[in-house]
Each structure stands twice: as C-alpha cells, then as structure tokens.
Length: 348
Image (cartoon, rainbow, N blue to C red):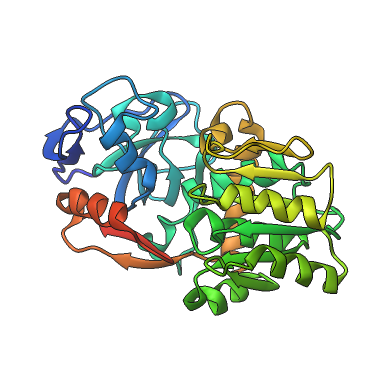
C-alpha cells in the first residue's frame, strides 16, 4: 500500500434485519492466495438486501456484505503470481460462501481470491468494471456447468442449438446473453419492451415481452420458424411463473430431455416437470467446486474479451451518489425494483 494514510470505511450489517451502519474497520491483510483491493466502485446485487432482510447464506454477524468490487491492487499474498500492486482489477468478493467480512465488497478495502480476480482494460471505468463479477460467475456456472456447454477456448466448435434467456435485461441476464453469443447459440430472450433493442445489441436474436399473455407460444413459434428448437433455458428471474413458463418453452419447442437452469429455487407453487432436467446455478461455485472454470473465466477469458470489446459492461450503470455512505439507500432502491440498470457507487 502507499504511504498515504487510508481508512477502511465500511457498511456494517450488525444483525439480520438491522439497517446498515457506516463504520471504520481495520484494513484486512491478504492470505497467501488473496489480493487486497482498494475499491473505487462497488455494485449492488439482490443478494445484498436478501442477506440484510433474512440472513440468507450467512451465519456470522456483524458482517460486511457485497460481491462486486472494482479498484486497484493494494497488496498481494505470498503465493499470488498473476497480479501486482497497482493493477486495475475487478473481482467476485466471497463473503456469501466464506462468511468472512474481510471478503465483503461494501468497504474501502476488500479481500479477493486470486482465482476470481480479473484485470480490466485501461479504457474501462471502475464503475463499469464493477458490473462484471457476480453476474459472470453466476452465468458461467449456468451455461458451462449446468447446461453443459463447452468453454469457448481456441478450437471449440460454435454451437448450433438455441437457448432461452428469461429476464435478459438483468445483470446475470446480460452476462448470459453475452456468453451465449460467444458460443454461437441462437438466443431467444424476454425483457421489458423498453430494453429489447439493447438486448439485441448484446447478441439476442429475438426478444419478447415477458408480460405478454401469449409469450410462451410466440417464443415457440419463432423458434419453429427459425428451425432452431429450444432445448436449453436459463431463468434469471425466478419470480411468479417465470420458471414454469421457461420449462413450457423447452418442453413445447425442444421436447423431452431439455435443460433448464434457474437463478433461484423452483417455486413450490408449481409442479416441477419431470421430462426436463432442472438445476440451479450459483456464483460461489466459480470459486469452490468449479474453481477451474472460475480461474479460466476471471484470470484468462474475461480480460481478453473485455480488452477486445467482445464482452462489455452491462446492464447500463446508474451511479448513486454518496459512496459507501449511500449503501442503505442503494439496497432500498434495488429492493423497490430496478429494471435494466446496475446500481453502483463511487468509493471516495
């Protein structure tokens, strides 16, 4: 770290149900395979307020939540080989599976595992960089693990099949669209009409209004007309009937044996179909059971794709003024409903 005296300002969650409290806490020290990052931007995710409201995933409080941080490397652990002090990086902060507040993003200084840290291009802002980590960790697990698609490494064969991405304007939805495009898949997506053009610009072939009462039949008809049955689906929303509708598309268009991956568990309000494989993705897997894919994604693939602008920051950034002190405002705003935007704060 520099000789400049810095403090680690943090948005502390003292207990489940409490409002965030702005505190100063010690600057963490990285372990052998860890990186200390001085955040310049932090992005919010629904998991942040879900932990606050219900304690989901975590047992130890008080804590610091947050998965998406972007800034400059301030120190590296003894076994770190791919990063050095001064590198501009973004990374997937691991508090949701490590249950360690030093690994929460909502603070000036956070710890990252080397394997889920990525360098960002010089032309990319920290705010843009903060949109990537959790979204791409989640969607990479969805596509490459649960849907069984190949990693787009040199020499891979572009896919000839089609995929449905329900909720394509969300963070994980835009990540899914961009990864699917790089695989060569024909992408059918749902989103609010105001976002249709944007989703197509990211790689979707056709986009449908999820509010349309006939949306399932229209998607199936479009896939039939294109000659590309939909055998794969990714529901990034998981609310109301979205998973049920996604399953109906796969069964009607692709038939038995298709695959549907969910962002959250299947609702007990609906009978789960038995003729397709239904699984659930999770960002934490990119740093645990499938760390090999996480390492490839963050250390190798994303930096190259970002540098060449084949994968871009998405959805569009909305900056909430006030820095870390605005964390509770950001959580409240996200919980109230945000469409097609990523809420981000600049860290002073």
